[in-house]
Image 1 (tube, rainbow, N blue to C red):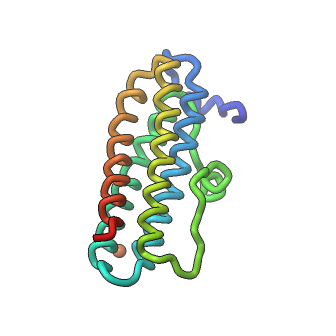
Image 2: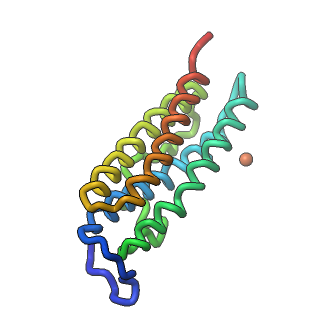
Length: 163
Ligand SMILES: [Fe+2]
C-alpha cells in the first residue's frame, strides 16, 4: 500500500494498523464480489424452488452489502484509506466472479456457500491482525460479520440438500 495522503491520516493512538487495514480492505473487496455474485444468482436463478432461492439470495445480498460500510469506516477510523472504485475491488478480490451464461440452481447455492466460507477466512485474517494491533473495536465487530457469513453458509447448505 502506498503512503497515505496526510489530509486523510485520521489521528489514532493505535499503531501497526496498516496490516489491519490491508486485511479489512481485502475482506471489503470480497464482500463486494460476493454481493454482486449473490445478486447475479438472485437475478438468474431458474427452476423448481425459484421463489425460495430468489428471495433467499436477495436477503443474503442485502446482508452482505450491509456490512460494507462498517468495514470501510473501520479502516478510516484507524488512519488508513479504503477502496475507491470497481477497479480497486477487482484488483483485490479473491472470490472469483461467475460470468457463466447459465448456472444450475444447486450449483449456485454450492458456489455461494464456498464463497461465504472463503469470506469467513478473510474475516479470520482481520481478527488476527486486529488482535495483534490491539485494535479492540475491529476485533469485536468482525465477530458479528463472521457470524452472519456462517449463517449464510448454513442456509445455503440446507437449501441445497436434496430431499
Ligand atoms: Fe430483486
